[in-house]
Amino acid sequence: MNIRQLQFFYRTARTGTFSAAAREYGVTVQAVSKSIHELEEELGSALFVREGRGMRLTPLGETLLEPACRAIESVASVEQAAALWREGPVARRDLRLALITPPFSKHEFICGIMARLMTHSLGVETHLSVRTGSGALAELRAGTLDALFTIGRLDAPGCSCTQIGTVTPGVFLGRRHPLRGRRLLSFDDLAPYPALWNDEIDGFNETVLVSCRQKGLSSPLATINTNEEVVDFLENRNGYIMGVNLKALSILPFAAMHGLDPTEAPAVPVCLVLLEGPRRAEVERLNQFCRSEFSLMKKLLSSEGTVTGY
Image (cartoon, rainbow, N blue to C red):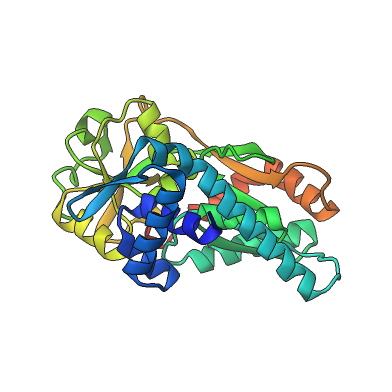
């Protein structure tokens, strides 16, 4: 068994096809198939059941998915640590932070404003970027990131997850969606329509979608992985995307953010994720700042403009 086999297994499990894993790692579909077949032979049992163009995990595959993810993250952490060592022993005095969310239009502008606010308030040069979960978590453990901001709680070994505020869920609808004219939507309104699910995002932490499903949202899930699929999902399939209820997330006239019935909408925590154990003074100042000034950062996120969830 080797890390390459585990990487191919994990990405195939997340995407449902050999071809997606092959594209990500820049190899042939045959190379991915052969690697997974060799892993199955070594384990003595199948990891996938082939179904038409896709595949699903066997019980053994389900059992190995989380350990494989941890193994991949551990190797990434070692690689990041080695890269830091090669850069030299100079101790950093800046802060490097990641907002765990799908990329959205104007995210560089918004992250820049928030980074300048924290630089001014903390007296420490601060950098903030948008990242997806597993890669950013590996960087946090390797020391190349100092903290993560997650929308929804994250349970990760060796990390503390502290709630610093809450946000309200919203629903992102395409221009021809049957519910587009409604001001507030209930879980019952949404039940007949598919909700976008992305394994890399919704499988990482308790996102807005995960939180709403825990409170009774019963819409069918549609696994979407590319921007092209998102456009088709909103435009032609009457699908919707759960997100933070900020009007700035609307991309008029293509799609708009709608509110949820406040009697049903859960308050979704926004959390600061740090490594457990001793921390640099700069990270401790960040910790205190985020606990006391979240309302100010939230106001920045609510600023005018248009952003998209993907």
